[in-house]
Amino acid sequence: MTNLFVLQLLNGVQLGVLLFLIAAGLTLVFGIMDVVNLAHGVLYMVGAYFVATFAAWTGSFWWGLLLMLPAAVAVGLILELVVIRRLYTRSHLDQVLATFGLVMMANETVKIVWGVSPLSVPMPELLSGSVPLMGPLQYPVYRIAIIVAGLGVAAGLFLMVNYTRIGMLLRAGATNRAMVSALGIDIGKLFAVVFTLGAVLACLAGALIAPILSVDTGMGESVLILTFVVVVIGGIGSIKGAFLGAILVAVVDTLGGVFGPILLREVLDPAAAGQAGRMLAPMLVYILMAVILFAKPAGLFGGRA
Amino acid sequence: MAETTVSAAPHRTPAIAPRVKAAAVLFVLFALVPPVVTALGDPFLVLVATRILAYAIAALALDLILGYGAMVSFGHAAYLGFGTYAVAILSSYGVNDLFLQMLGAILVSAVFAFVTGAISLRTRGVYFIMITLAFGQMAFFFFISLSAYGGDDGYGLSNRSTIFGSDMLENDVTLFYVTLALLIALFALCHRIVSSRFGRVLTGIRENATRMEAIGYAPFRYQLTAFVISGCMTSVAGVLLANQAEFVSPAFMSWHRSGELIVMVVLGGIGTLTGAIGGAVAALLLEEFLGMVTDHWQLWFGLFLVLMVLFSPRGITGLVEQIGRRKR
Image (tube, rainbow over the protein chains, first blue to last red):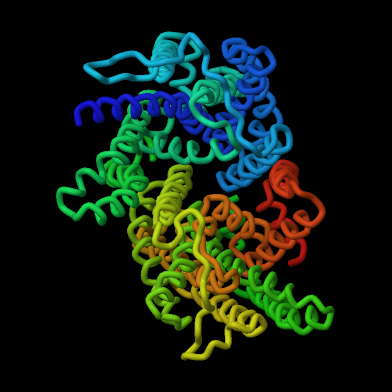
């Protein structure tokens, strides 16, 4: 039981780290630019497809990962320049419609370019296999690597946001956009940087998960909604909130799926517990969100609702 | 923007009449569909038309809160789902009556809309959009894991609903006219609602919630009531869709469906009721058309949406308003 718990907790943290990479960009785009971007999940999907393609070309996951980064920057810049930039002054409704259109276009384009059957990305040899954790417990090296890489990016982001000039502008922008602009900062350039940074982080998340997940067109959507929950729970515009929200959502989601039925078995008969558990588990994160929002409508670290 | 709408408000009442006329014309055209397509030798199109009418009901319901209450609900497909599953679940327990099934759908939707609406309405703007989306997904996942009714794969219905014990809905044309009758009745209801005192307060809150609060109205109550009414109406569309497709599945409640409902409302012009019906017709016909000419209709539909938003001066909403103003 303890072993199972530790294992699932690690899985939860791994998912949380991944969600954070996606949510960090999304929360900045929401917080600073006040843009609803439904196409953020698309970037995660595109990152996975990029790494699949580049890894197949070069025969190495590492080269694939390296080549994915400039491609991600390009996608982010182009998307910002062509579509997102024109949405800053628009109503949320227009933003929803345009980015919804982008989602439809991207999903279909991916199907045309890469086909409908899922792709797989070979695990880098260096990170394959498992390591012993405690007692008989083994854990895949690759998942540990994802956790480490994600925490590294989180730490880098934390340093950047808190100790650099661009980070200062990000924080200022999230608090009061008009004031930053009035103080002579080129807000258009700042927005482009923020959006591209978010795009690269989302692509990176997709690329990192690609070797342990099948790469298909639906992958962006399930993650997008979870990321929304993370951003809402954490508070829009808050990197710290996104991090805690991501870990919280992922751990609740992972542990709930495994331990929900086990706990229910204490009060219900096994068959009913299994059924109820399977139905309740996917709803747990939304219930968590509802409870948090009921107490704090602006999320855990949100300034304004 | 707020100022022009406020100053235009006193002229609203006479402006409603041409919209009702336009809706009446639409209804007459709908009524002609079955004889025309039967004459053309393509009676299958009656089912396609029924589907369009059912979505028109859902778009109408969404327009009530999106257009008149500025509540951008991105989770309205959940109520379509409650409607479809009310048919599947109740009929598996031997309750086949259309109106009892609608009652069941409405009750479930009212409770869900009340609870999720009460939480969502504590927030504004981007938060509201994301939270309604998340609650919609919650309902979606609930039905995906409902293995007794097929889960992900869906559940085929053995028969359509009955009306007072008669199985007349098995006839596609009868189903079409019942759907049309419900659409007309719900349009009339919506029209009554928006021109009532309640509707005026709702519109006032849309324009300026703080002012409405200052003159003694509690925005939350009005918005929540409208949200619940809209959810219940959407579930009626779900009941009809289940009968049209004779199949229910969580696909009816995916977030794409919620997005499509918003597209319908915006395409026809928000806050006009008639526009929502026209928008549903336009969006679904465009889908059908693109589906006929290309395998990748989603690509073109998406492109159409992006271009519409980007190249009309104030978005699709602005474009429609402009055309509307010129007509007036």
